[in-house]
Every structure is written in C-alpha cells, then in structure tokens.
Image (cartoon, rainbow, N blue to C red):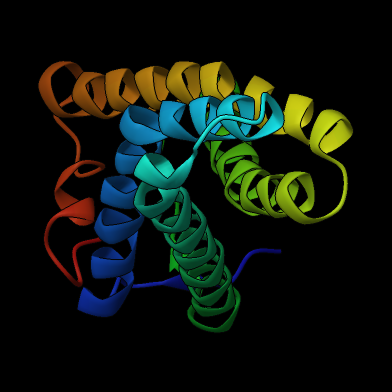
Length: 165
C-alpha cells in the first residue's frame, strides 16, 4: 500500500518543476548530440559542438540524480492520495507516473551507456525515448488540464501549492 501524505512539500514541487525544465531542455537541444556523434564518426571537427555535448551529458546526469532524489522522497514521505474518480482513471494516472519515473531513470542511463560503452545499441534505445517522452508529456499535461478545467478538482493545484491535498 502506498504511503499517503497531506500534500507535496515545496522541495518536492521544486524538484518536479526543475526536472520538467531540464527534460524540455534535453528534448529541444538534444539533437546536437546526434550531430556531434555523426561529425565525430565521420572524422570532421566536432569542436564547435563540444559545449553542447558536455551540456547534454551534464543535464542528463542532473535529471537522473534529481529523479532519484525525488523518488527517494516519494518513498520516504509518500504522496497525496489520488483524487477520487473512476478506478480506471486513477490506475491510468498512477501508471503514467511510474512510466515517467522509469523513463527519467532509463533515458539518462542509456544515454551514458551510448556515449561510454556502445553507441549503436544504447544510442538507439536512447533515441527512441524522445517520442515516448513527448507523448507522455502531452498525455500528462492534457490530464492535468482536464482535472483542472473539466473536473475542477485539486490535481493541478497541488502541483503548484505545497501542502495542498
């Protein structure tokens, strides 16, 4: 049984929104990594993209570390109980959160493995995660807006205001 809290702490909410920003940064600027690796493999000068390369890796590591901290807090402090609703809707929301955690851990790890172990094998897995992230984000945002504007419940508010249940 999941441990329930009376609301997210300011730190938990800050982690959530920081990870959101970092993931958006990766989705927008991650294409530089593909160009960097292509140029490097073709023997061309990759120096102009070196900053983007290190930035992508650094931000990916930050996403991984912050996600592990967030997951640890989730396990230690619990989360607010799901807003009452149809069982399928509640289970779908819970599943989406678990998939997000999985993606936020697997994606940076496969990116690191692609750079430092095997570009082809892990790089392909890493690249496939981008459209998956985009779809998950769209579903997540649509669900939050549906809860806020149609159901008029506290789901979105509790992701903005600490302690809201």
